[in-house]
Image (cartoon, rainbow, N blue to C red; front, side, top):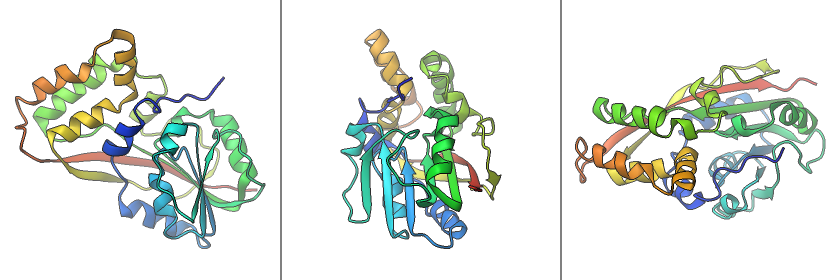
Length: 248
């Protein structure tokens, strides 16, 4: 089965509106890797995580199956980008001190990906998988978004989305567990930022392809009744993770 690519079509929206991870997350990863030489950021998308890892690793290899997403990634002498699936790479055995997957592992073939992790990780390397859940803003806005998420575009989510809803607690994870990172992404948004972010959802794009209509338009009309156009609001995304040691 070919890997799913749900984000090439809206790669520019993804780059512009997707939230960025907090510095605390990277500090946590840094504390777990005593010798930060080589890292693999798998499912790198537009390179957001790879850029941060490059600030404290000697070099970072970043992979994705979306050529359009990789085209959005910033160039760096410390990062090499590859158009490769998670489950089959060209990296040598025993290469990496850290392997990261941000908001993407639920799309992978777990068994094949973990087999590749075991092959390319150094003995004792760290595997860090994380994601973020449904955003919260305020009670009145959240009520509208939750109904949209579950009822309007709910049927258009791929089944893998349930792993996000379950905070990765139900994914297979055959590794020695290390302390997980829990925290939140916070940002200050306008209503325009919210609209851009919602349009980057794979379920919204699926709805649009199948019906020819954008469901975000109707939602935003309702949101505007409780969120004035010129007002900024704090947005919060809960972060969850599974972090482990690769034993060989």
